[in-house]
Amino acid sequence: MRKLKESKLQSSKGITLIALVITIIVLLILVGVTIASITGENGILKRTSEAAKIHVVAEEKEKIRLAFLDLLASDMVDGNTITIEELKKEFTEGEVNIVKCDSEGNEITTGETIKLADIATSDSNTANNEQYVKITFIKTGNWYVTNMKSGKIVVSKEGEGKKEPTEPENQEVVANEITIDKTEIKLQKLSDQAEEPTTKITASVGPENATNKEIEWSSSNDSIATVDNDGNVTWKGIGKTTITAKLKANEEITKSCEIINSLKIVATEDGWDIKSTGNTTSMIEKSTERLEYGIAVKSTGGNGTYYTGMSREVDLTNVSTISGTIFSANDTKANEELCYIGISNSAEPNGEFENGYVEKYNGPGSGVKANNFSMDVSKLTGNHYIKIVAEHPNMNSNTTLIGYSGNTGILLEP
Image 1 (cartoon, rainbow, N blue to C red):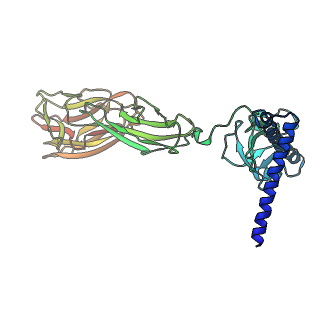
Image 2: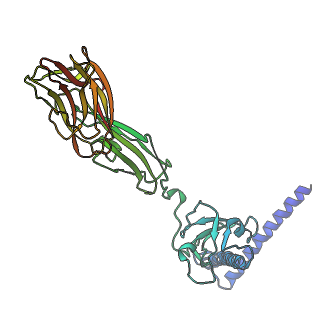
């Protein structure tokens, strides 16, 4: 019964309100006011509604102005910086939402500390003071972008500012991370290899939705290795270089890979100068499968002491170590060191070598002896000869063999 009475009462109130509105309209018509002037495009009702909106906007702007004046005068502000939570306290709880933004209202999510920036003083420190906040009144949905330096509203939903803000999802996503799948690569070229060795460095850019993922590749020394726009690296010479991947959108972000290039001299006659000072012609023995001897020189006979040698010109500018295995044989004087390898400025078959850059080996009475060697040439630059020499002491009809292993080759490393 009580609910029925309440329902009748509410219905009666609604009827009374409608009757009041109709009565007012009738009275206005009686005094010459038309329906169009009441409800039309420029009618009284619309103008009244617009006036109400203008009043609300003015009220909200005044609240913002007073909030900034209050903060500026309060002891809360330390060093002209505040937090968003402190600014919210100047309004009724739940009345507004405040975020950092740019001058057009686009939200900025990095941190919450903002600067009040001497609102009432000069234009000093302009570069550090141009910060903005977007204040949205939850009840009305109206929002206002306020310059933290001047305390003035620069953009608002009501169109008093420059333009509507860009939607956050349309903002540019800046790349801020780059990774590569290799940090060190060792490339080796064989002396009889026609094409230069290549490899690829694969890079990834983050975040996944970054707007610009372009990478700029570079080599610190193109004479050692080059790199193309896709991260493909090509061997160019012995030595070390650094390949760098750099974000075009943020050039301070880079990742690097060290390239270490070596050269292996394998079984081939090309490039070797083979000579003898004896009476007989040297004979070249070559294993096509690079087993045992790579290139070997065998000589017999001669008057007095003579030499048989093989030399190859190389550029040692970026080379630090030469290593490999040398084969030698001599059918007499097994206990004497009759076979040499070293660095020389001369291609001639003799005992002339750079000071300190020579190693000697015994030639056994029978069979072939293998000798491993490793030589530090890091202090040498420019062109020199790798020279392997067999010495025939003052005896006729000796047989001597010299050469290098086809399995290991002669390795030039940076």
